[in-house]
Image (tube, rainbow, N blue to C red; front, side):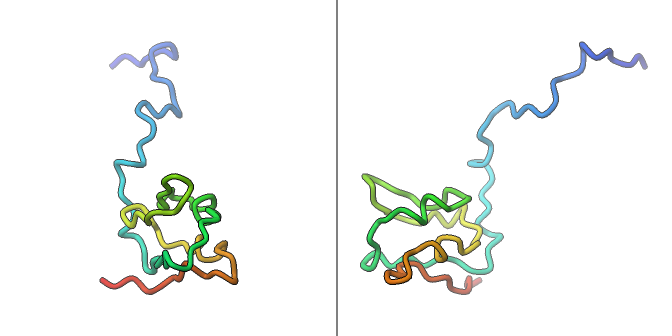
Length: 95
């Protein structure tokens, strides 16, 4: 078997069809999940800004939902929610 020369090798570190994350629903990794209290929320969007999974959905400048198919339950959203508001509470995930 003849080895390929460097010009024949495929380029490395290339993601041919970015983004790939929508194909991989990662919410089932979670052991806890955020519960959002819409009545308390002041829509400061800090949770949306800091969410590493883009699991918080915003429409017209307001939080509208949490996408639990992608939320990994890290709790960052609860930590950045203003202390006087506490519109997000982490709870144990029920199986």
